[in-house]
Length: 359
Image 1 (cartoon, rainbow, N blue to C red):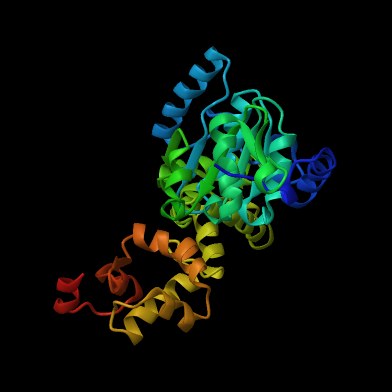
Image 2: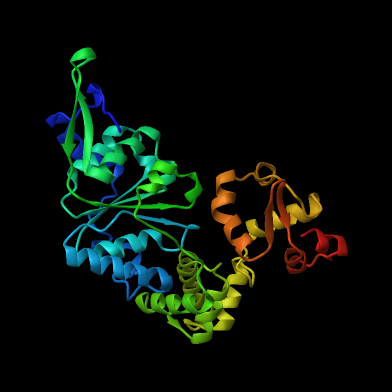
Protein backbone atom coordinates (compact mmCIF):
# COMPACT_ATOMS: atom_id res chain seq x y z
CA UNK A 1 0.00 0.00 0.00
CA UNK A 2 1.48 3.34 -1.04
CA UNK A 3 1.38 5.93 1.75
CA UNK A 4 1.82 9.56 0.84
CA UNK A 5 3.47 11.50 3.64
CA UNK A 6 2.19 14.80 4.89
CA UNK A 7 4.76 16.56 2.75
CA UNK A 8 3.17 14.91 -0.26
CA UNK A 9 -0.41 15.12 1.02
CA UNK A 10 -3.09 16.13 -1.42
CA UNK A 11 -4.08 19.56 -0.24
CA UNK A 12 -6.42 21.37 -2.58
CA UNK A 13 -3.80 23.86 -3.60
CA UNK A 14 -1.34 21.06 -4.39
CA UNK A 15 -3.89 19.24 -6.50
CA UNK A 16 -4.68 22.39 -8.42
CA UNK A 17 -1.01 23.08 -8.99
CA UNK A 18 -0.42 19.48 -9.95
CA UNK A 19 -3.11 19.59 -12.61
CA UNK A 20 -1.36 22.55 -14.18
CA UNK A 21 2.18 21.23 -13.75
CA UNK A 22 1.43 17.69 -14.84
CA UNK A 23 0.07 18.80 -18.19
CA UNK A 24 3.12 21.01 -18.63
CA UNK A 25 5.85 18.70 -17.28
CA UNK A 26 4.70 15.12 -17.51
CA UNK A 27 1.77 14.77 -19.89
CA UNK A 28 2.25 15.38 -23.57
CA UNK A 29 0.34 18.45 -24.73
CA UNK A 30 -2.48 16.57 -26.36
CA UNK A 31 -5.65 15.12 -24.88
CA UNK A 32 -5.91 12.58 -27.68
CA UNK A 33 -3.40 11.68 -30.37
CA UNK A 34 -6.11 11.80 -33.01
CA UNK A 35 -6.61 15.51 -32.39
CA UNK A 36 -3.02 16.16 -33.44
CA UNK A 37 -1.86 16.77 -36.96
CA UNK A 38 1.19 14.69 -36.11
CA UNK A 39 3.30 13.19 -38.87
CA UNK A 40 0.57 13.97 -41.40
CA UNK A 41 -1.86 11.95 -39.31
CA UNK A 42 -0.46 8.64 -40.49
CA UNK A 43 -1.55 6.84 -37.32
CA UNK A 44 -4.67 4.67 -37.71
CA UNK A 45 -7.76 5.58 -35.72
CA UNK A 46 -9.54 2.22 -35.44
CA UNK A 47 -8.59 -1.42 -35.00
CA UNK A 48 -9.80 -2.13 -38.54
CA UNK A 49 -7.34 0.46 -39.87
CA UNK A 50 -4.55 -0.88 -37.68
CA UNK A 51 -2.48 -3.24 -39.84
CA UNK A 52 -0.78 -6.30 -38.38
CA UNK A 53 -0.93 -7.94 -34.92
CA UNK A 54 -4.01 -9.87 -36.06
CA UNK A 55 -4.22 -12.23 -33.08
CA UNK A 56 -3.80 -9.35 -30.65
CA UNK A 57 -6.53 -7.35 -32.38
CA UNK A 58 -9.01 -10.23 -32.20
CA UNK A 59 -8.42 -10.58 -28.47
CA UNK A 60 -8.74 -6.83 -27.92
CA UNK A 61 -11.99 -6.61 -29.87
CA UNK A 62 -13.59 -9.12 -27.49
CA UNK A 63 -12.36 -7.24 -24.42
CA UNK A 64 -13.50 -3.89 -25.84
CA UNK A 65 -16.97 -5.15 -26.71
CA UNK A 66 -17.41 -6.80 -23.32
CA UNK A 67 -16.37 -3.63 -21.45
CA UNK A 68 -18.74 -1.52 -23.55
CA UNK A 69 -21.66 -3.86 -22.90
CA UNK A 70 -21.02 -3.72 -19.15
CA UNK A 71 -20.46 0.04 -19.34
CA UNK A 72 -17.23 -0.42 -17.40
CA UNK A 73 -13.68 0.84 -17.91
CA UNK A 74 -11.47 -1.49 -19.89
CA UNK A 75 -9.06 -3.54 -17.80
CA UNK A 76 -5.52 -2.17 -17.50
CA UNK A 77 -3.31 -3.13 -20.44
CA UNK A 78 0.41 -3.79 -20.78
CA UNK A 79 2.05 -3.90 -24.21
CA UNK A 80 5.64 -4.98 -24.57
CA UNK A 81 8.04 -5.62 -27.42
CA UNK A 82 10.79 -3.89 -29.41
CA UNK A 83 10.44 -0.16 -30.16
CA UNK A 84 8.58 1.02 -33.24
CA UNK A 85 5.98 -1.76 -33.42
CA UNK A 86 2.97 0.45 -32.59
CA UNK A 87 2.45 0.30 -28.83
CA UNK A 88 1.68 4.02 -28.53
CA UNK A 89 -0.53 3.95 -31.62
CA UNK A 90 -2.43 0.92 -30.34
CA UNK A 91 -3.13 2.65 -27.01
CA UNK A 92 -4.65 5.63 -28.82
CA UNK A 93 -6.67 3.33 -31.09
CA UNK A 94 -8.14 1.50 -28.07
CA UNK A 95 -9.11 4.77 -26.38
CA UNK A 96 -10.76 5.92 -29.59
CA UNK A 97 -12.64 2.62 -29.93
CA UNK A 98 -13.95 3.11 -26.38
CA UNK A 99 -15.08 6.63 -27.23
CA UNK A 100 -12.76 8.08 -24.62
CA UNK A 101 -9.77 10.37 -24.34
CA UNK A 102 -6.17 9.47 -23.62
CA UNK A 103 -3.41 11.29 -21.80
CA UNK A 104 0.12 10.23 -22.54
CA UNK A 105 3.32 10.48 -20.56
CA UNK A 106 6.63 8.67 -20.15
CA UNK A 107 7.90 7.15 -16.92
CA UNK A 108 11.14 9.21 -16.87
CA UNK A 109 9.03 12.38 -16.84
CA UNK A 110 7.37 11.33 -13.57
CA UNK A 111 10.30 12.35 -11.40
CA UNK A 112 8.26 13.24 -8.30
CA UNK A 113 5.24 11.52 -6.75
CA UNK A 114 3.21 14.71 -7.14
CA UNK A 115 3.65 14.49 -10.94
CA UNK A 116 1.79 11.18 -11.07
CA UNK A 117 -0.71 12.22 -8.39
CA UNK A 118 -1.63 15.33 -10.36
CA UNK A 119 -2.23 13.31 -13.50
CA UNK A 120 -4.38 10.73 -11.71
CA UNK A 121 -6.48 13.42 -10.01
CA UNK A 122 -7.01 15.25 -13.31
CA UNK A 123 -8.40 12.20 -15.12
CA UNK A 124 -12.09 12.03 -15.93
CA UNK A 125 -14.17 8.85 -15.60
CA UNK A 126 -13.28 6.14 -18.14
CA UNK A 127 -10.32 8.08 -19.53
CA UNK A 128 -7.09 6.36 -20.50
CA UNK A 129 -3.62 7.05 -19.13
CA UNK A 130 -0.71 5.87 -21.28
CA UNK A 131 2.71 5.53 -19.64
CA UNK A 132 5.54 4.79 -22.02
CA UNK A 133 8.75 3.11 -20.81
CA UNK A 134 6.84 2.06 -17.72
CA UNK A 135 9.72 -0.18 -16.64
CA UNK A 136 11.61 3.02 -15.77
CA UNK A 137 8.99 4.21 -13.27
CA UNK A 138 10.57 5.03 -9.92
CA UNK A 139 9.63 2.93 -6.90
CA UNK A 140 7.52 5.50 -5.06
CA UNK A 141 5.51 6.38 -8.14
CA UNK A 142 4.98 2.68 -8.78
CA UNK A 143 3.60 2.18 -5.27
CA UNK A 144 1.21 5.08 -5.80
CA UNK A 145 -0.15 3.22 -8.83
CA UNK A 146 -0.98 0.04 -6.90
CA UNK A 147 -4.14 1.28 -5.10
CA UNK A 148 -4.99 3.56 -8.04
CA UNK A 149 -5.09 0.57 -10.40
CA UNK A 150 -6.85 -1.82 -8.03
CA UNK A 151 -9.20 0.37 -6.00
CA UNK A 152 -9.16 3.69 -7.90
CA UNK A 153 -7.86 5.53 -4.89
CA UNK A 154 -4.70 7.09 -3.50
CA UNK A 155 -3.54 6.66 0.10
CA UNK A 156 -2.45 9.67 2.14
CA UNK A 157 -1.61 10.33 5.76
CA UNK A 158 -2.68 13.19 7.99
CA UNK A 159 -0.82 14.15 11.12
CA UNK A 160 2.39 12.80 12.60
CA UNK A 161 3.43 10.26 15.15
CA UNK A 162 0.72 8.58 17.19
CA UNK A 163 -1.90 11.01 15.86
CA UNK A 164 -1.27 10.07 12.23
CA UNK A 165 -4.07 8.41 10.34
CA UNK A 166 -4.46 7.14 6.80
CA UNK A 167 -7.12 8.36 4.41
CA UNK A 168 -8.01 7.19 0.96
CA UNK A 169 -8.66 9.77 -1.73
CA UNK A 170 -10.74 8.41 -4.62
CA UNK A 171 -9.67 8.92 -8.22
CA UNK A 172 -11.93 8.51 -11.26
CA UNK A 173 -12.15 5.05 -12.75
CA UNK A 174 -9.61 4.91 -15.55
CA UNK A 175 -7.66 2.49 -17.70
CA UNK A 176 -3.88 2.45 -17.50
CA UNK A 177 -1.99 1.41 -20.62
CA UNK A 178 1.67 0.67 -20.03
CA UNK A 179 4.25 0.18 -22.76
CA UNK A 180 7.73 -1.24 -22.34
CA UNK A 181 10.55 -2.72 -24.34
CA UNK A 182 11.65 -4.68 -21.25
CA UNK A 183 8.78 -6.57 -19.68
CA UNK A 184 11.23 -8.48 -17.51
CA UNK A 185 12.33 -5.22 -15.85
CA UNK A 186 8.87 -4.60 -14.41
CA UNK A 187 8.39 -5.59 -10.81
CA UNK A 188 6.10 -8.54 -10.18
CA UNK A 189 3.48 -6.54 -8.22
CA UNK A 190 3.12 -3.98 -11.02
CA UNK A 191 3.02 -6.55 -13.81
CA UNK A 192 0.39 -8.60 -11.98
CA UNK A 193 -1.97 -5.62 -11.78
CA UNK A 194 -2.39 -5.50 -15.55
CA UNK A 195 -5.38 -7.59 -16.58
CA UNK A 196 -4.45 -7.65 -20.29
CA UNK A 197 -0.83 -8.34 -21.24
CA UNK A 198 0.30 -8.71 -24.84
CA UNK A 199 3.57 -8.85 -26.72
CA UNK A 200 3.72 -7.05 -30.06
CA UNK A 201 5.41 -9.11 -32.75
CA UNK A 202 7.62 -8.02 -35.63
CA UNK A 203 5.69 -7.42 -38.87
CA UNK A 204 5.79 -9.54 -41.99
CA UNK A 205 6.89 -8.03 -45.29
CA UNK A 206 3.32 -8.29 -46.58
CA UNK A 207 1.94 -6.37 -43.59
CA UNK A 208 4.62 -3.71 -43.94
CA UNK A 209 3.84 -3.40 -47.66
CA UNK A 210 0.24 -2.49 -46.76
CA UNK A 211 1.50 0.04 -44.21
CA UNK A 212 3.91 1.60 -46.72
CA UNK A 213 1.17 1.94 -49.35
CA UNK A 214 -1.22 3.46 -46.82
CA UNK A 215 1.36 5.98 -45.64
CA UNK A 216 2.32 6.82 -49.21
CA UNK A 217 -1.32 7.63 -49.94
CA UNK A 218 -1.50 9.96 -46.93
CA UNK A 219 1.76 11.64 -47.97
CA UNK A 220 0.57 11.96 -51.59
CA UNK A 221 3.60 9.97 -52.71
CA UNK A 222 3.34 7.84 -55.84
CA UNK A 223 4.58 4.30 -55.27
CA UNK A 224 4.37 1.02 -57.16
CA UNK A 225 3.58 -2.36 -55.63
CA UNK A 226 7.16 -3.48 -56.12
CA UNK A 227 8.42 -0.22 -54.66
CA UNK A 228 6.30 -0.67 -51.53
CA UNK A 229 7.53 -4.23 -51.12
CA UNK A 230 11.15 -3.12 -51.48
CA UNK A 231 10.72 -0.49 -48.77
CA UNK A 232 9.03 -3.07 -46.54
CA UNK A 233 11.75 -5.67 -47.07
CA UNK A 234 14.46 -3.25 -45.89
CA UNK A 235 12.57 -1.86 -42.89
CA UNK A 236 13.67 -4.33 -40.18
CA UNK A 237 10.10 -5.66 -39.81
CA UNK A 238 9.21 -2.40 -38.03
CA UNK A 239 6.47 0.07 -39.10
CA UNK A 240 8.19 3.12 -37.60
CA UNK A 241 11.29 2.44 -39.66
CA UNK A 242 9.21 1.75 -42.77
CA UNK A 243 7.42 5.10 -42.47
CA UNK A 244 10.66 6.96 -41.79
CA UNK A 245 12.41 5.32 -44.74
CA UNK A 246 9.47 6.08 -47.01
CA UNK A 247 9.82 9.80 -46.35
CA UNK A 248 13.50 9.77 -47.26
CA UNK A 249 12.85 7.70 -50.38
CA UNK A 250 10.07 10.11 -51.39
CA UNK A 251 12.63 12.94 -51.21
CA UNK A 252 15.06 10.93 -53.33
CA UNK A 253 12.37 10.12 -55.92
CA UNK A 254 11.40 13.76 -56.27
CA UNK A 255 14.98 14.93 -56.72
CA UNK A 256 16.70 12.05 -58.52
CA UNK A 257 13.80 10.37 -60.35
CA UNK A 258 10.39 11.28 -61.76
CA UNK A 259 8.69 11.29 -58.35
CA UNK A 260 7.46 7.71 -58.57
CA UNK A 261 8.88 5.24 -56.03
CA UNK A 262 9.67 2.07 -57.94
CA UNK A 263 11.73 -0.85 -56.71
CA UNK A 264 14.79 0.52 -58.50
CA UNK A 265 14.33 4.00 -57.00
CA UNK A 266 13.81 2.56 -53.50
CA UNK A 267 16.90 0.39 -53.78
CA UNK A 268 19.02 3.30 -54.99
CA UNK A 269 17.78 5.56 -52.20
CA UNK A 270 18.45 3.00 -49.48
CA UNK A 271 21.87 2.18 -50.90
CA UNK A 272 22.63 5.87 -50.57
CA UNK A 273 21.40 5.74 -46.95
CA UNK A 274 23.65 2.70 -46.32
CA UNK A 275 20.73 0.40 -45.56
CA UNK A 276 21.32 -3.05 -46.99
CA UNK A 277 18.85 -5.62 -48.32
CA UNK A 278 18.21 -7.01 -44.83
CA UNK A 279 17.56 -3.55 -43.39
CA UNK A 280 20.88 -3.40 -41.53
CA UNK A 281 22.38 0.07 -41.19
CA UNK A 282 25.96 1.10 -40.49
CA UNK A 283 25.72 0.48 -36.73
CA UNK A 284 24.19 -2.99 -37.22
CA UNK A 285 27.04 -3.97 -39.50
CA UNK A 286 29.62 -2.47 -37.13
CA UNK A 287 28.29 -4.67 -34.33
CA UNK A 288 28.59 -7.76 -36.49
CA UNK A 289 32.04 -6.78 -37.79
CA UNK A 290 33.21 -6.19 -34.22
CA UNK A 291 32.11 -9.67 -33.18
CA UNK A 292 33.67 -11.31 -36.22
CA UNK A 293 36.89 -9.37 -36.74
CA UNK A 294 38.00 -8.64 -33.17
CA UNK A 295 36.49 -11.48 -31.18
CA UNK A 296 36.35 -14.38 -33.65
CA UNK A 297 32.56 -14.32 -33.58
CA UNK A 298 32.18 -14.09 -29.82
CA UNK A 299 30.87 -14.56 -27.25
CA UNK A 300 31.29 -10.92 -26.19
CA UNK A 301 29.64 -9.08 -23.29
CA UNK A 302 27.18 -6.32 -24.17
CA UNK A 303 29.18 -3.78 -22.14
CA UNK A 304 32.30 -4.57 -24.18
CA UNK A 305 30.38 -4.09 -27.42
CA UNK A 306 28.98 -0.77 -26.21
CA UNK A 307 32.40 0.58 -25.18
CA UNK A 308 34.05 -0.55 -28.42
CA UNK A 309 31.40 1.17 -30.53
CA UNK A 310 30.98 4.24 -28.32
CA UNK A 311 27.27 3.47 -27.92
CA UNK A 312 25.06 3.29 -24.86
CA UNK A 313 24.31 -0.23 -23.61
CA UNK A 314 20.58 0.51 -23.53
CA UNK A 315 20.65 1.72 -27.14
CA UNK A 316 22.24 -1.50 -28.32
CA UNK A 317 19.86 -3.66 -26.26
CA UNK A 318 16.68 -1.77 -27.21
CA UNK A 319 17.34 -0.53 -30.75
CA UNK A 320 19.80 -2.81 -32.52
CA UNK A 321 19.86 -6.16 -30.77
CA UNK A 322 16.17 -7.19 -31.04
CA UNK A 323 16.18 -7.25 -34.83
CA UNK A 324 19.63 -8.82 -35.09
CA UNK A 325 18.35 -11.60 -32.83
CA UNK A 326 15.08 -11.98 -34.70
CA UNK A 327 16.84 -12.04 -38.09
CA UNK A 328 19.27 -14.67 -36.83
CA UNK A 329 22.48 -12.65 -37.16
CA UNK A 330 23.47 -12.96 -33.50
CA UNK A 331 22.63 -15.15 -30.53
CA UNK A 332 22.67 -14.51 -26.78
CA UNK A 333 24.55 -16.88 -24.51
CA UNK A 334 25.38 -16.75 -20.78
CA UNK A 335 28.85 -15.52 -21.75
CA UNK A 336 27.72 -12.84 -24.21
CA UNK A 337 26.70 -12.24 -27.82
CA UNK A 338 27.84 -14.39 -30.74
CA UNK A 339 27.76 -13.78 -34.48
CA UNK A 340 25.90 -16.47 -36.43
CA UNK A 341 27.08 -18.16 -39.64
CA UNK A 342 24.41 -16.08 -41.42
CA UNK A 343 26.17 -12.91 -40.24
CA UNK A 344 29.46 -14.20 -41.66
CA UNK A 345 27.84 -14.98 -45.00
CA UNK A 346 25.95 -11.68 -45.18
CA UNK A 347 29.12 -9.64 -44.63
CA UNK A 348 31.20 -11.81 -46.93
CA UNK A 349 33.35 -13.61 -44.35
CA UNK A 350 34.20 -17.31 -44.74
CA UNK A 351 32.40 -19.61 -42.32
CA UNK A 352 34.56 -22.35 -40.86
CA UNK A 353 33.25 -25.75 -39.74
CA UNK A 354 34.13 -24.81 -36.15
CA UNK A 355 31.99 -21.68 -36.29
CA UNK A 356 29.08 -23.64 -37.75
CA UNK A 357 29.31 -26.16 -34.93
CA UNK A 358 29.59 -23.58 -32.15
CA UNK A 359 26.50 -21.56 -33.10
